[in-house]
Image (tube, rainbow, N blue to C red):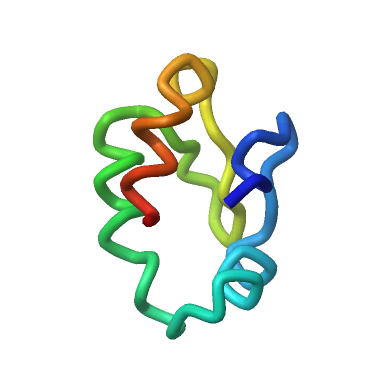
Length: 64
């Protein structure tokens, strides 16, 4: 989860394996964060937008 604090973010695979989550487990959280414009929509990458960084705790809660 700390990877979302990084300006460059992380790959989806790295995030998923660090959380030991199933392949589709982060899909709903990712979609919700992208809809709120808290997460970029780059394929294969999770990166918080400036708005997401301002609301980082709320963004992280989506993935908890």
